[in-house]
Every structure is written in structure tokens, then in C-alpha cells.
Figure 1 (tube, one colour):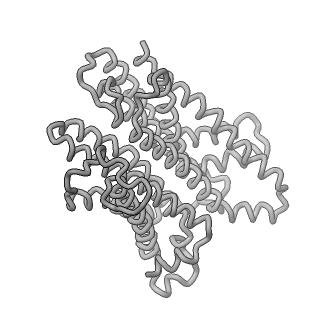
Figure 2 (cartoon, rainbow, N blue to C red):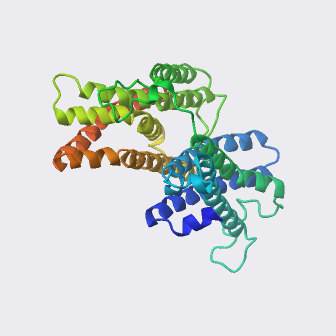
Figure 3 (cartoon, rainbow, N blue to C red):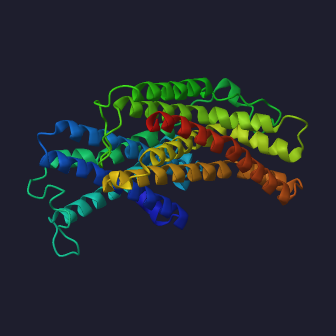
Length: 387
């Protein structure tokens, strides 16, 4: 009940983010139900049904990632003075954010079910009812248990991961030196070597698999069926590697900006990048991986766009939208986290133009680093498939 009251009084931007989570959940739920319909109409082709279900994990993961990012920026999950006295400590606020996430995702799942039943023709009296009856196995009854299980995946996973991400953690020995000690060194995130290794391993696996037989295929849920399973496994390893390496690359950008006699603006920009490396680095790595995969796919299949079916297009839209929105949400969270520092600098007489120049320098440094990285990974991923 408290979560619903906070939702009613939330800022329109906060409501918009929750509605985007609900829309993403609806898209994933519809993909899962379409996979179930295919399994019902093709009982003899269980292998393809499993492949379609596996491909649904990609937009599912992107949606859960976005829902957790929204939960982290939710004003209801922030500590406020006096809330602990009324029983709303860090643990309760994390549970409240998880409940809000579950409500938004459940709303999206219910919308997906209504839209699915409408296209099947089970709900009459609306335009386009039964428009996809043949494709959605309208002549076969839907198993209630399977429908509820598939539709509960996004709410359960998103709320669980949100609760784990927002749970209170004990302070570590080295965390006392924070904003109060601006000369204190910031340790680099530990995932850079592992990320580089995984990305290199993924490219190697893709190159090796592209030389093998094309019999073992893992097709997209549309009509693309000529990619070896090893190639797609290599793409998955590369994506995981870029996600792990993102914070380390961002931290390295901040360190390099502070070299060679930096001025105050470069020092400020580099310091902020180092502080925000863990917060925005992983979403940056994921966006880099998605962009490189999209570029590689357009290079391989761009000459014949008909190979992409409607479900493939929906999945791609979900993944691109969710990853981009997650990056923007993480940037908003970082801005909120440094609002006190920004206010202090302005109070001390720092010109507003200096802060804007520092922001422009951070954006430029990230673009100069991640755009060539994305193009390089995409080229290396597409080269074995086009030769």
C-alpha cells in the first residue's frame, strides 16, 4: 500500500520511467507467450521452440537490467532523515523498491497477456481481434500453468535483483575516504583484465566456429538460420567481456585525463569519471556490446532485411531501448549522487561554465574511447561471417 501511495505522488519523470519498465515487461511477456504459442502449434519441433525460448533471454536480461537501474534512482528508495524512526530503514526501503518494481513489471505482464489474447481472438469486440489467430495457435487451449510461469519471470527476477542490488551493505575498511578527502586515490575496478580476456575469447570462438560446418545452427526467432551456434556463443562471450571491462575502461579514461599537466577543469572531469566508473561503466560496456552486435548483424544480414521476422525486430527494439535507457538512468543516478559536490563547488565560487566544460570533457572522452572500441569489436565480429 505504501508503494502505491508513493507511486501516486511521484514526479512525472519517475512515473515515466516506471511506465517504460512496464512497457519493456509487456514486450518480453509477449515474446514469451509467442514462444509458447509456437510450441503448441509445432509439438514435433521442440528444438526450435527451445531456441526461441533461449533467444527471449536476451531481452529478458536487458529488461531486468533496466528495471534495476530505475529502482536505484527511485526517490522512494533513498534514505531520508527520520525514516528509520518509523521503521523505514535501508532494508525496508530496499524491499519497498523491490515491491514497486514488481508492481510495474506485473502490470506489463498483464498487458502482454491481454494483447496476446486479443490477437488470438479470445477477446472480442476490439479492432484487429483475432488478426494473428493462426500464428498464435488459436485452435489450441493455453496451458494456464505455463502462461503464469512465463509471465512471472520478469516480475520475480526484476524484484529479486532489485532487492539484492539495494540491500544494505556493511562499510568496507577503505570506504571512509570519500568526498571529504579529494586527494585520496580511487582503486580501479577489478573487472578489466577479465573483461578483455572474455572479449578476446569470444572473438576467437566466433572466428573458429565460422570455419566449421554450418550444420549446428542457433537461428534467430525469425527466419535467420544460417549462423553456427559457436558464432553466437562467441558473441555472448564478447558481450559479457565488454560489460565487465566497461568500468575499468571508464576509470582508465578518468586517469588519463589527469595526466600531462592538467588544469582544474581536466582534473575535475577526470576525478568524476574515476568516481563514476563503477556506476556508468557497466551500462556503457553493455551499450557498446549491443551497438557492436547490431552493426555486425547489419553487415552480415543487411543485404537481405527480409530475414528478420517481426519477433526478431521486437526483441532487437527491446534490447536497444532498454540498454540505452539503462545508460541514461545510470547517468541520472550519477548526477544525483554528485549533486552535493556540485552545490559545494558553486558555493565556493566555481564558475558554472567550468562545470559545464568538465561535463563536456567527460562525454567527449567516453565517446573517443567507446566509439572506436565498438567499431573495432563489430568489425572483428562480422569479418569471419562475411569471408
